[in-house]
Length: 256
Ligand code: NAD
Image (cartoon, rainbow, N blue to C red; front, side, top):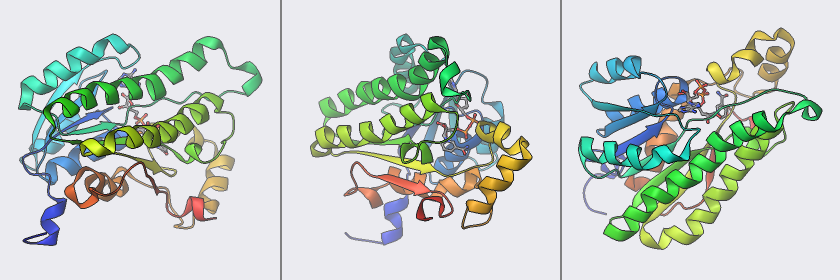
């Protein structure tokens, strides 16, 4: 290592593709990457205008790709539009995800499949699409999958979500085992209970809100800003010898 250790955290000259970029944690990660110097490609079903405005406000570079991530056929177009915007994508963040709350006995096949499609199948095939190119050009890359506390725990009334997020942690390890030798770092972030749309239903249920809050050692729900440090770290040279690991950003939830 020559120069300043803090330079290891810079994403200057890199391009990051973040799915689910229009809101919540995805928006927070986009903003963090732009501030760390990366060009950002945001993928979402809807316009990412708010994300674009926040990034413009810090003089960053942002391009959106509109795509429905419940359909694997969109992957080649996402890759083509991202490459056309800034050249090579160096960092892939699989953040888009959905949750469906329902008693296990009442889950329909349709609801089960819709969660697995976005949270699990799309994550794997996006990883595969970008890693293929990175192995060919031999320049490495960074993958950060967004896992969950339900990669470690079973949760309540969200069996398809728990299954998909447990798969994300397993996949992160499996892909690291195959791709680390190509200088591709595959890691995951497991957010704790964060105040976003994903948890709006939970937070509107006074009893569940209180139960959850009282169990968080940090004494508060997390925010998109709380993810920023881990997201930059795992996308940067500072984490080049970290492979297949799922880092909890959870205010201590898993420590209890
Ligand atoms: P959110 O609901 O605000 O964001 C979800 C994002 O996924 C949105 O940008 C949405 O547009 C996108 N998305 C969903 N389905 C899509 C589709 N078919 N096509 C394209 N985009 C799609 O919630 P969030 O909390 O910001 O969630 C981000 C990630 O973090 C998810 O994977 C979620 O499971 C995970 N997570 C959240 C929490 C939490 O407490 N909020 C905890 C653990 C994990």
